[in-house]
Length: 136
Image 1 (cartoon, rainbow, N blue to C red):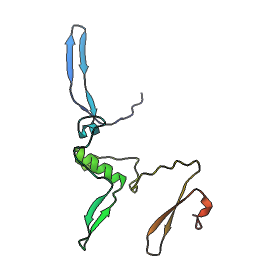
Image 2 (cartoon, rainbow, N blue to C red):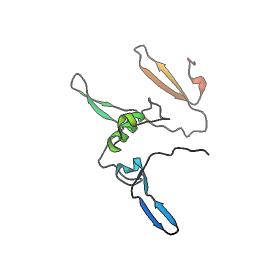
Image 3 (tube, helix red, strand yellow):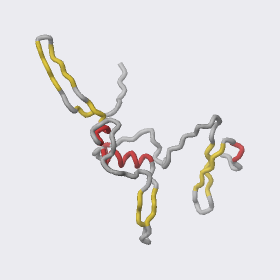
Image 4 (cartoon, helix red, strand yellow):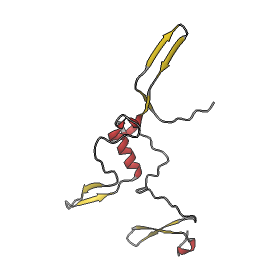
């Protein structure tokens, strides 16, 4: 027998009936994340921007910071799902991804990172591997 965990569910309305033929147990289950507002495919209880966070630097100027997808999921589950940070396990999401992109071309897409003298990292994309002068 194989068992695949499919999430955490919450029992909403248990019901037990019995008669001379036996006992019948019925449960209404909701995926725990569906409890953000109580319904599957529901809405968040407030207007929320997930893709950017305002922060004030040491000079008092406002900076816009783009959190990673990992951080967005973690904050959503913590604040709106009510789960403790120590109990949140996020797998299969790279902790460095800031934006989700989908390549819909028919040829491979190559990503190459270039480093400037000041340590800044620049990402270059191309469908031609030979476009990169300094291949690994």
